[in-house]
Image 1 (tube, rainbow, N blue to C red):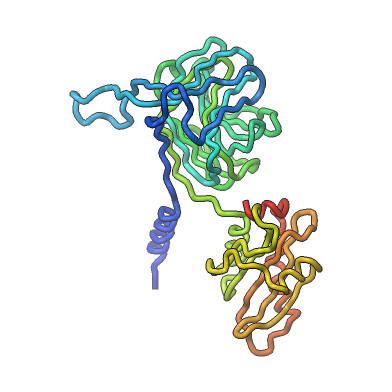
Image 2 (tube, rainbow, N blue to C red):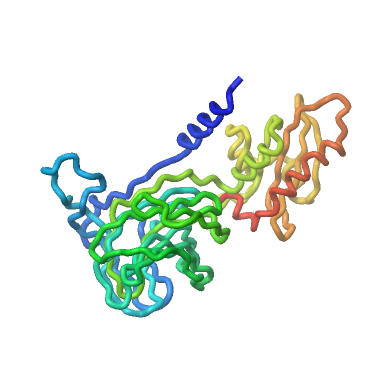
Length: 351
């Protein structure tokens, strides 16, 4: 028997094993250019930013062990160098090669210029230039703020007053898990945990405001790799029906038009082409009950919020004496209905 404390240790180990890490090293990027996988955007109005890699002297992240150790290290950093004083001008640099859901995103930044504004920070769960979260520091306003852009409209900022100095390096971190958002400054929680449901995944990046010029360095992210919606639905269904022998979810992927297995309890089934029963259920929008050797099978249509059929779920149950079709189907359908509530459309399944 495993004691409760052992369960906690095993759970912590599982989280660590499922996490991935990535550091963004700009040293291989030619000065004056942008690294691969990053693109510039502009939120608000005004001139676009001028983002580029430059070399800069930085203090070490860790305190030197010896007083004789160098106090500064020359390294490649990202710079936003184009000042322009439009008030609602927000130059963005977005890492657009991968999306992240749950993560801790950390970077050092230095505000090194600006007359009207001295603001720099992190962008996360970025959808496009009109929809994203921000955490940023202001050296003129002496505050740290969280806000979001939704359909291009900026929310009321939330956050404490605290001192920031132009020309000084700071470390800023965002920890996002589900709808919970934590902000850390120099490794310490900056304000209470925030809750927001606007965006559950997206890109990360950097932001400045108005005529601010700034530097960003030592960016890294620790994250839980995103699973497709189809995989999420299968996992959630198995949590509700843990005794299923197997479960397959069929849908249409972005590169193939025919119904195929997008997610399953048994990974060997991935990519399996839909059989006649699955295609019939998808076409006729009717649940089917059948029996295979060693299993009873409930094949049910999966709908989006509008009621349109966008996939099929195939549940394999262990048969038992006196099993009745109606009660078996009734056991499965509430699980399907619960899963359907968050589906926006057929394309979402493979994303």
